[in-house]
Length: 339
Image 1 (cartoon, rainbow, N blue to C red):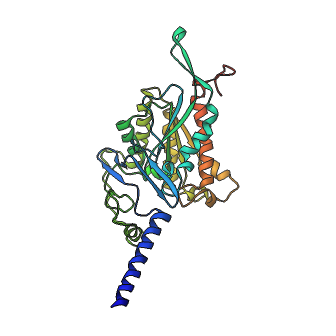
Image 2: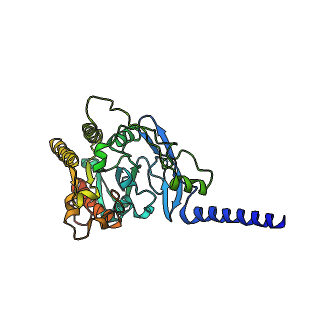
Image 3: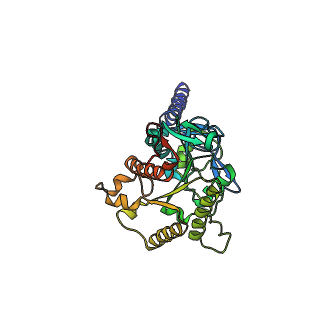
């Protein structure tokens, strides 16, 4: 009998050690939670903080991946950029808070400190030197332009100086916003798992359910619906004179190159649509193809970018930001508009 109790104690101890290890080392048991939404489809639940595989993740009260709270309205000494996108913008569990594209962009734009913003006209004009750089990150896994449009309609643009819409080729085929995955897929949990072991087992050994995609609500096809949503985002921001830059990243197979015909067609149609609307498009695909590194070095999988890929994309976004709003700010030392 004594051996039975000893064996039971050892088994319980082993389970507790596994549970502790999964929690402390890998962050299982404390996943980010999602909210089901009628308009947006879903978004990350507000006010969350966790670590996954050693990477720090924090979600603010607006479901954005940001550190700290943001002021509304922003101080005139603040340069604020809103990055809105999908898992590439969000960074997911595989990216530390400090290594996301938004965090990298904030560092890239640090040189804007000291430039001045002029508020008002004539004798009432006041110059405010830029002291704070903010890059907000509104994003969630598998969002496409229609999710992003719904988010902006709900929460607004946070009085940003510029909005960067970061999409991927796959997003051009994104379904209408729907909340079907929330609480049904382990990757979109609505509540905490029973234990770290429970989450690990479900993620590793359970097959995720598939749901039929909701039908398109209108007469247009999925690609056209997403292009229209991009145009609607631009129009929504233009009402408040907020510039917008659309950045599109490729899939790994497009860089190799091994594009599929429907992807080439969708990209060409997007370029034509944006050109006709006189919007700004930054396509990362040509730059990736020109790099000396092998395509896999730019990606962590078939769609998400590696650290190097994130760095290159951030560089392009920083240049696009300067081109889009540089003439709205002047260098304090020279009094000249920034170039």
